[in-house]
Length: 435
View 1 (cartoon, rainbow, N blue to C red):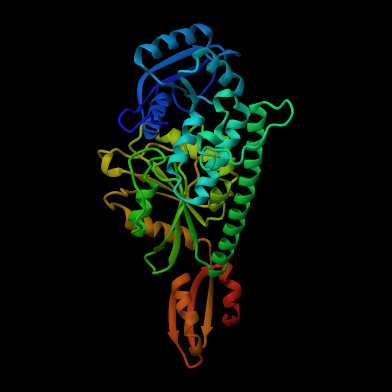
View 2 (tube, rainbow, N blue to C red):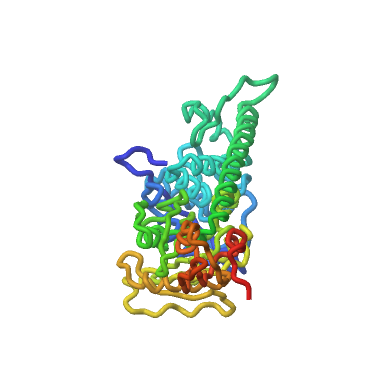
């Protein structure tokens, strides 16, 4: 979206408040977040406008009078792009593009988020998922502004382009050609992502056989999930103080106080009004959350809308149908909180535990690891085993994958009292001591 490296694209933001609605964030707070998104996309916000309406205008979303007012402001401020804080319907998109003319781009929050994801997707899987979301978003909104996409992208069919635009049939318009080729590209991307899902499924099956617990980091964007992953694992992951700084999932091994190993995976951050096309496209990645043994819900204790962020995360987890997995609420950034206590959670909140930490300074991380161990212990099966001396490899596996409470050497072998994941029970049940 940037014009060039020297002059950032100048953006004008528009937000509305609908009478009787109860949005998660106030209009002002939501526009502040939109400004952060624009900054993340490399834009410079030069102005904002708000509008209180009884209902959405069917033609222009905000009404013709407000459109004329914004036209004057955009011209005076030299803005190149108008960004609406809500998702525009295809009808509103077309109507506003007609009103503002060809010299000004009209975007909505969803298009802006999709652009940020496209900039930050660093792996093949991430690029596939973003491209699918972009095309599914664009298809119903396709106008002359979106035509000749292949030539804009160099015809390569990569990010933002349509591969292989063919010859027109009898009476076929350029829009019809582009729609057909976008549908073809969507079908190809869905097939590629199905292969990704199958690969992930096989990988999860191997992990389940190994019995290594999976812990998923979830949270609002910029809550500090990647910083926490790096602090707990020493992983060299990208960290930046901006929205959606990291997109592609990262999984690393963590050693708990008992010596037991677990896997910790970082997932894409959530945000209010997250585009539904993006959630659908990233379902293969988000399925990692569904398969986790434990969720760490990371929140920024210093943010004035922290409770609304928690609600957004809970709503998104419900939307992707995450089962009732135990959760630990991690209040992050206590080094910046000026000793303020965490706010009271809404009635009915269900967490296995809450912990306060600073991922950047390391404060509270030992307590967090102990809390993780206690939460995982509740999912373990406790048994006594007698392992022959010749199977020392199994004893080593138990120390790595289970919690060994007691170990003694006897004439018949090594006797151990262990708590191990249910998935590993079949592997060791022949060595179980009965009675």
